[in-house]
Amino acid sequence: MTTGEPPVKVRGLTKSYGGANAVDGISFDINDGETFALLGPNGAGKSTTIEILEGYRDRSGGEVSVLGTDPQHGGLAWKAQLGIVLQSSGESGNVSVLEQLTHFAGYYPNPRNVGEVIEAVGLATKARTRISKLSGGQRRRVDVALGIIGRPRLLFLDEPTTGFDPEARHQFWGLINRLKDEGATILLTTHYLDEAATLADRAGVIVGGKLVDIGHIDEIGGAAAKVPLVRWQRDGVVHSERTSEPAALAARLYAEAGGEVAALEITRPSLEDIYLGLVGSHANAGPGEDVA
Ligand SMILES: Nc1ncnc2c1ncn2[C@@H]1O[C@H](COP(=O)(O)OP(=O)(O)OP(=O)(O)O)[C@@H](O)[C@H]1O
Image (cartoon, rainbow, N blue to C red; front, side):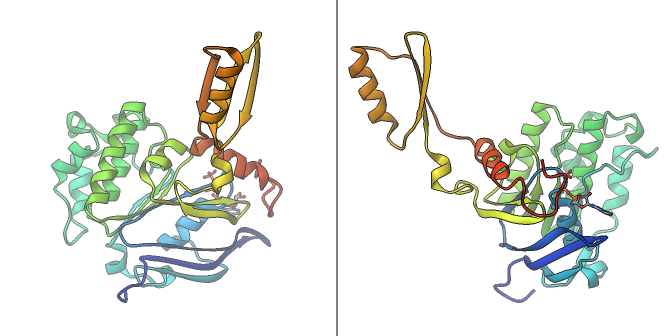
């Protein structure tokens, strides 16, 4: 990789299946040490994009560079720098967690300590349990462990916490934050918007194969999408108003009521609210008949 070139560079990427573009001319960079979230509804083209970057799928058009290499021509030394957690778990084998991780660690030039990784994904008490005997969420943790065992420079996480219980998800966020502190560059796809808001520095939103927004995680949807909502009750009727000056509105309501305002609430749209608004407004875009 030449100095200054981002670890991931995508320009005009397209992928068509039987004439329909599942990925339709998207462009983005992921900078060194950054966590980038690719968001979008089912069938939007996220996994197709991520699998092209991993070298698992060929593209139909456009330019892609991952760690300075075209993934269609990436060799073993290139692959050893990637950590990959695929969307569906492949791990159901008859070996133990410890055996599986020790085996995979052997493929990498500078692997992490197996015991530390098992601890980090919260499987210390299951280290000697056969993978086939683990629950779905525990197997997913094995997938994550396999993705990070090789100390990757670039980590692909395709819906990594599907099936995790809330505590496991929070533990996982702690793990990812530690990897970020170590300087890993991460591409994450997730349907959990709180996960994206917690982990990602920047995000791109794909709908129908097209990138409909990209930017800092706090700027997705633009300033207009962030206008706070004020809700209150008067004479048993709920009122609401969007305003960029919620305190002024609350003060006016207080003056009008001559005291406390019933059920007064001021809320700011969450990333999920903003995302749903964005996806809704692009719902008929592109080829995606499965873009709901
Ligand atoms: N091998 C394939 N052959 C034909 N069409 C495919 C193939 N793989 C994916 N597609 C289609 O490409 C589109 C994008 O699929 P993709 O798996 O990339 O979506 P996604 O954003 O990852 O969705 P999800 O959130 O459900 O994982 C979908 O319409 C899907 O049906």
